[in-house]
Length: 399
Image (cartoon, rainbow, N blue to C red; front, top):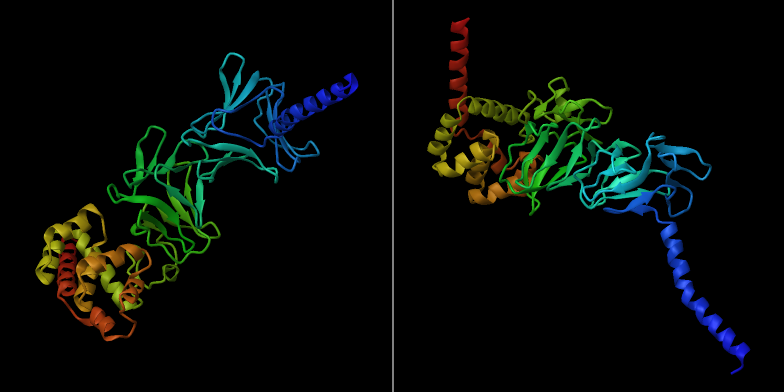
């Protein structure tokens, strides 16, 4: 082989060997995201995959997102801060640090492990949690859930001011905390097995266990395009489509028209049997039962001959509305099904109303079983009415 040919062959080999290095360098130069513990140094940038938008840590210490026309999309407003490093911590917090390692700016998103920050093709700069849900966008903390969105165990949303969080704990309890870790509201579902908090498209906020069974619900269905917020004052609020609150910290908004809850009954417990008269009777029974739970439990046991531990577990530990416990027992009696079977149907469809539960069990509207549910007086309602009359008489005497 001539010296010239040998030289050409060697040159070809060197080019081929160098090619992968050049390609890899290009990929690194046009990365669009940072993962846990990844960073940008001064004068480095992220670029969207379409090449139109960049996030740059400028030499003046400002972190800035630009579009292709150099229009500022967002900035950290840290010019002159001395920031020389932008790092996404493993806990999800995005930080700017100066040459001495001092933090000069933060996104305030600590608590979201395995997060990513992405410079998107649409110009949005977003931090996503490990499940791919947005937690921060262009400087704004995501403080809400919209229809169909959910929290899984140990996930949370944070108020815009960063002082409050709403978290679904691993013990199954949904809790709102302030910055001092003091609880301002909770669902009282410790030990329920809840692993998912989802805002349904019908306005009902539900907690579900790993089998998909509903273990707790706000019972606020009937509101399209709802939003759940953790407010700057720590309140947990459900809003309807035009921004009107219909539920806050466990209480239904009494100012809403009653038809909004699909029932002609006072705000509060809603049975949704499909029969207004029966709904009102169950509403009254529920209120009366809460006045004296022990008496209610005694009445239920003596009327139906059921297990005291089972009733007390549902009413006192799992916080099931007393009227719902009554309906579980009553429905089992009417349909000749085991109480455990009816309880499971109730858990699977809780929040959808007793009309849905009954239909799932084969009790059709207008059927003899439905009329039995509605009309057969077990004595529970009459006992409640007598107690209510006695209470009214006592209140009258006091006045």
